[in-house]
Image 1 (cartoon, rainbow, N blue to C red):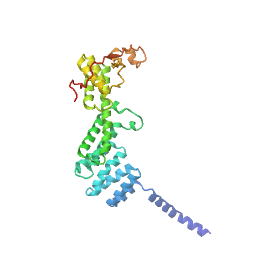
Image 2: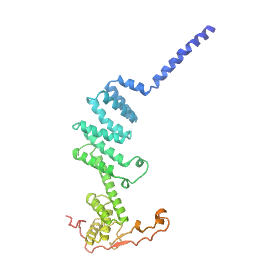
Image 3: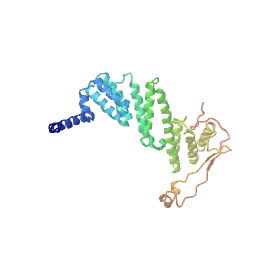
Image 4: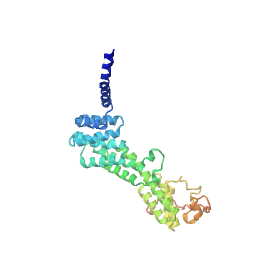
Length: 314
């Protein structure tokens, strides 16, 4: 009995060491993973990256794809790794890295059969960047933010469709361009409205005209026309105001600014120059200035299809 107890005591360190080694094998560290990758073939590395993609471990997939490309910089696996790095970075929400990966693939493989995917993903990355992280959580009006990246995304998709009009991603790109065009148009209207509220009628007219000329088929077009009518009228450009009003009445007869007689009624905004210091520091709660009466612009008797520039539409 004493001998058995002594033998068990002697075996205890061996058992503990065995358990520790087993634990290390089961819960390998990042260094262990790198050691395994170092002895893996390119196919094994690629398959491991694919497993990470399928399970949603996108950061790990990025790491494995980068190792694959670094160890085997030439051949089909390297090209595929470069292509899939675009998607893996995008899904890991590293938008800048995804766009850079797309640019790099386009530069290195302009004749690749799947280069259309890189062009498409470049636009998609710009779209995601324009929306930002908060838009994924809150319903934020994109047109009230900086639209520089939205314009970049629009241009990216435009280039993509010109190069690959029959691509399998073309339909989605066209739908995204419609949304981006609406965002850009509404942004111009917001800026024009801001200029109107400060009495900068020339700047407001220029912004409104730009929106009309470049985004005429968007929901923001009637508001842009109304701003051009109002700003032209306040600048004393009666003919331009009347011509623009005819266009608005002809194309958007149900516009909310028209009264029963067809006159354009615009609610005049309180301008900053009319606000007192007390009203400004209290954010409009105290010493409110009197709201001016609505602006009523009479509908011209003859309604014809005349463009804001004064030339007849054909």
